[in-house]
Length: 215
Image 1 (tube, rainbow, N blue to C red):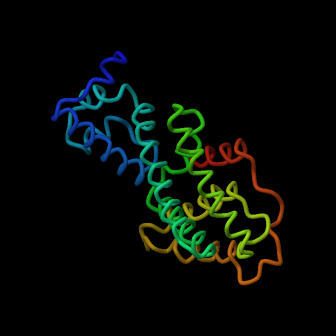
Image 2: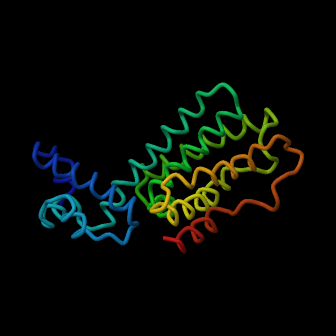
């Protein structure tokens, strides 16, 4: 498929099929992770596998299309949290929002890993998210309400912890993760911030290696 073909506006039926495929893929990946195949997605969407391949050359191109929507959703969550006037509540709202996002989406860890290898627009969205959340954390730090040493780079590991609980308890209680998310949040935003976080947050490469091992 040429660049011109990609840029040409889709017919109404083709556009509907593309959106149906994306919605189905988002649901399948969120529920079952990235082991889902394009054949699985075609079957779930009720379209022929050829229809999927006409819109997406392979699974990687479909995943990349979904990455943009994931980072857009997380950036929107960060923007809503930033609107909170109280710095502690602002960070709390964001933390619970991203934990809930991961509880619903098994593929979130892979999105973080893949972001750095994706097209520039997705890298830009990832960097915008980092900037927004770092500012939320800075406000909390300046207000003296967050544990000393807490950093944006701690979030992927905390989110992974909540995700592990969500994945293992979903069939029994889909909301069980909230109990443990609250424990983590209270650890980040304690009544007293005198005791700093232990050690240092992982760097981006180490985070990606750790998350890749789980996906």
